[in-house]
Length: 330
Length: 279
Image (cartoon, rainbow over all chains, first blue to last red; front, top):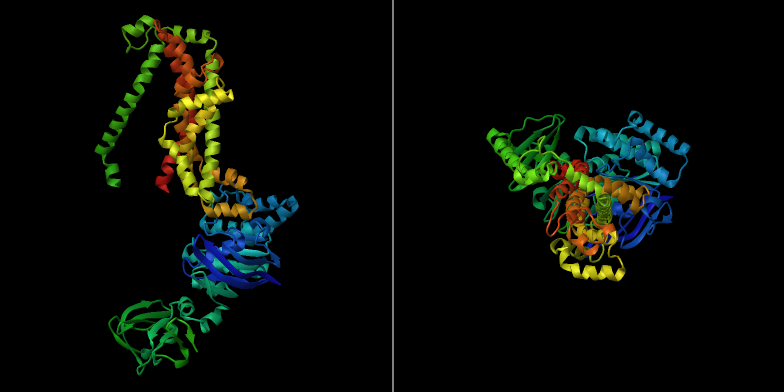
């Protein structure tokens, strides 16, 4: 069964066309990530799914039922917000139980679910604290706990990690992945961070300017991007785009990933190094060929100095060709 | 900025200016209070002197107390002020929430229309208001005053509160919607507690002019049983004889309740003023 299906969803704010004809399906138990640059409409799409905004046209089905006119609380969803959005006047337990009380669940059910969720998220000792007394990471866990206790058909995450610091972000990312495995629930996750998208998703939906650019598993998108935008958006550092003559691609724009470039004495690409990042495991070399910037990700440690002339090699099969409009040429 | 703030000379000057202003502002109040405890002759002989064993007298207070209506006036003032504050805060906050939260046609125009009342003094419409009150039979009732003061207070309340409500996180309201809270519950349980400092500010701004107003009580509710404190105190001021002891005593006592209300609100008020700066 499909957990969510969108058919030709459009959304206008006044005259501004924010979501353009979006159709997609989320299978039961699938972890889907909406990713795209700021202002691409991914958060709006999540709000439309949640029912916080109405779609101007199109059909939204959650677990088989059409929900276009259903209020958010009756859609069988739970949402985790970027700013946590915990109720400041309620303690952790109160935050987690409010929705269940609104649904009229019995005390025993509520207590059982709170126990289960707080165990899962290690919140047991915080149940009587107020949000103001918790750290950012704890608040985020409470927000997730508030979603779990509802046992929704669909979890919605709106950039849940962007307010956390880097170390905590990585831990919480792993926790969310574990949670998904344990609950086996369908989840939709919005982020602008391609690392989160790549690491968490079963399926990635890349959005730009309110349009779906490509849908697929992380590796499909990485290995086989549909266009220049997807190719450039996924992968870090992002793909190099160069005029074709530099990479023997004729007059098309050619793309090559930084990790597909390597040092080669007889390599076809002559560059001058303008910056080096030593990361220990990798060495990122930012160089210029004429005026074109090229990033190369060299594995291991390399002694490269700024200003040095280098020759880089690549395999012809690891290049991608794009036409003038950014479409992929195969 | 930090340097200027920690400079001792600036601190002294700043406090000097504030203390000077406080003295100027409190001086009339001080004079009223000390003279209310003096006998009539001493009030005029040495208005600035503190009451001593010779001049001390509570005759003013006794007169006021004996005038049995005084407590009624007191009660009227209290009812009018508290009821008005309640309505101004309730309707002001609800209107502000609607304006800041919902997108509807004419939202901006409605906001401007409501704010217009800040710039137009309500007293210009006194004749029309009196006409209306006569037509509806509300003259000489406390409702006449409550309605007029509510109308007078709403524009500023809507203006200030809608600005504060815009700052309340959308995520929080949306979380409430997803959890199945009604719009009213979201408003009363989530939004109102977060804008409490702003509401205290509005309450203080409205409270003092209402308490002190003489104009509308005189015109709309001059009957004996609906007189407010300010209007009631006028009985001691005659065309030929004025009972200064009683006037000063009545005024001294009139200060007390506002002071109490102010202390209640001011804790919130200070947080309201500083919340924007610190955040």
